[in-house]
Image (cartoon, rainbow, N blue to C red):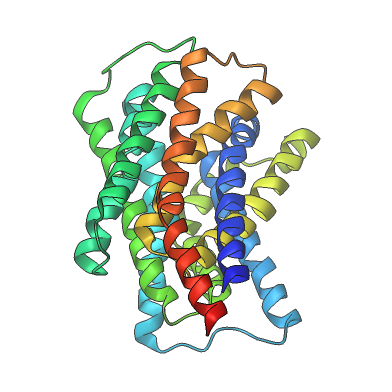
Amino acid sequence: MQRSGTLTYVALMTAVVLWGLSFVWSKVVLEEFDVFILVFLRFSLAALIFVGVLFATGRGLPKLTLAEHGRMMLLALFQPFAYFMCETMGLTLTSASSASLIVTTIPIMVLVMSAVLLKERITGIKTLSVLLSAAGVVMLVMGAADFSWSLEGGLLGDLLMLGAVVAAACYMVLARYLGRKHDALDITFLQMAYGSVLFLPFFLWKLPEFEPSAISNQAWVGFAFLTVLCSFGAFACYNYTLTKIEASRASVFINGVPVVTVVAAWIALGERLTLVQGLGGAVVITAVLLPNMAMLPTLRRLRRAGAKA
């Protein structure tokens, strides 16, 4: 049990780190790739990698009922399709500062939805952890050297970003529900495959403008990183986590993504890291660790009881 618990949190932190790094690579890759070309190729190639893994391990393709396939399609509709569509369009209609702050509400949304739909308990520690992590991200965003508050774009852009929040929360809650019955590899493969189908019309729309020969080697390296590690690896790790722990606990770690992004941008892109951002990152890390630190006395009692037995 202890080994399984350790693996769960290693997988969760791996997903957070990879998604955090993905923002840095995306900034490079999107200078040369159209966003719909990039997203379709990322998820379709990740799905093909999953096919190879499933057959190499002797598992074969998942055998599900029509209703189960419907739930997997719904999962892909939430994430990646609805999340990416709302986020991409929202960022064109509102300021980056507004968008960043709205996204910090994902763990709050998951906390409420998981309590209502999955009957997960809302504890004081969970609530404090969620609120602290949101406060830390606010410090990260507003503490940036080039931060300037803007409400340009107004209501529509903010509503689209809120739609991205709802889509992400629905994905986490549904993935947790599906993870009670299905293996994480099967869930993630079908999520990638159905996500590709949903993005296919947009890919075909932009395909005539796509010139692979014009893409630089650096952008192709970034594309490979995003496909293999961020689509294939990170989603597999996070979905595995959701088969092991409550959605409300796993969602708090999502606010660790901007911490990784800020540090990676500081190291790789030379972006300035301020004292306020450093403090914000420390607050987020504290918030992420808080629920698990609170469980240590209980885990020690269980270990002692097991040793006596």
